[in-house]
Length: 401
Image (tube, rainbow, N blue to C red; front, top):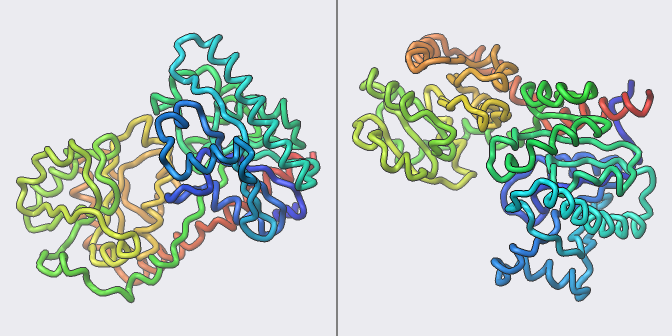
């Protein structure tokens, strides 16, 4: 079966708008798909509360001008790729306690949103549309009915029901959306299994990562704020959030081995700022860094860690951080979760704080150039080209059927 999808018309509805500053799986998928297909990337529509609260935000002002007809909302990004700013304002309804009222108004929001998308589809001359829904269980719940695509795809990249905003009404809607979608694709095995409970056409498609800068980390120089820190360095790079990371594990690693330097690179939440970790001599908080400098920090670590708390928020998430660590060739000790199963041959997986200490010792003792090459090669296989090829494989399976 040919894995490549060619000359199709694809509509991608993303939770994150194209003009967001942060990275987005869906934007990367759109760029990859546009190499061989025509792709319309649709921003989420402006809602009434956001219009009122953020009226001075230039991005909101742009959307208001488009809604008022003062500006064209269909923008050419590159060959075969367009971005749509919907010319409709939807109601802010997630606060409603009545499920019936929420679903009634959500249908109206969906209808307005779909009409805006339809106008762009007609203008571009799209036919036999493939609809790709990026985890939006509210604003796209009725898109299959209103847009009538040839194939509808639900993309699960986070367990959204662990977040209060989505949980409130999502527990009653998401499984229904999964059931009625033609295909569900997920970036972790946990989420693929979750979707598979409701839809047999559910597939794990992996995750793409942009790792070139990490692959070249050996070319970097030692950051100045690491020059007076003793080896071995046990390091973490990323946001220091107590909802995701286990402070007790980090404290145990440092306390059990005072000769190790535990280095934490990233912004702290209030729990981290108040934690006793700041009173431990061999724990070093280096603060936020420019993303382009992160490979140099990882390159200076002897072992990288990802001491996640196992919860609904973390258990299904694809750990992109692990790919970055492995792309530098570093040994990694991480919390064992379902999503980490695909990394099991190239990482050390811990279940307890005591496991962390023993596995870090093993990682320090066993590290060698051959293992380093294997880690880098494994990380290099996680490209957007490969991930999108798996999505194409799932689509072709349905088309051929």
